[in-house]
Image (tube, rainbow, N blue to C red; front, side):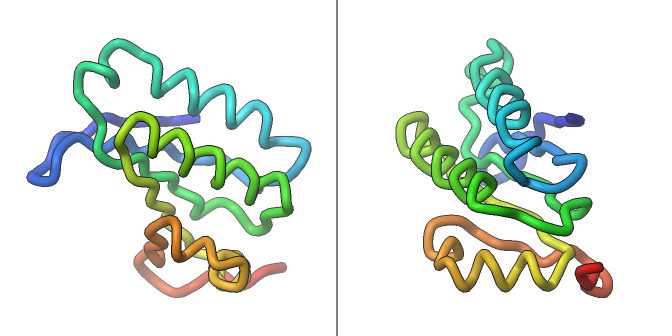
Amino acid sequence: MKHELLNGPDGARLSAVIPGDLITTTVEAIRRDLHGLMEEPAVKRARVQCLELDLRQARMMDSAGLNLLVSLVKLGRDLDFKLRVVVANASLQRVLQFTRMDKLIEIVPAPGPAVAAT
């Protein structure tokens, strides 16, 4: 998973590119990676205000993926950061809205045309 720590006018932001779908077979490795990133000394020193997940490569998400997002929202409450997701797939964006995840996290449509599910 690629990641980048950025400093901006709103504070530090950790951006992580998720390289595929958020499904049962991938979620545990992603969870470990993200929790590990949040524990890195450089990230702790930066006092990250926003964890941004780049989901542009994701075409689908199951209940395990939704559970991952909820766990990151809870972690964010503990460590005082907000969760933002960048989504290119229209179906994935509808899932996030239908499940009301858009009330807990910021959903940012990716620039350019939306990617349809295949």
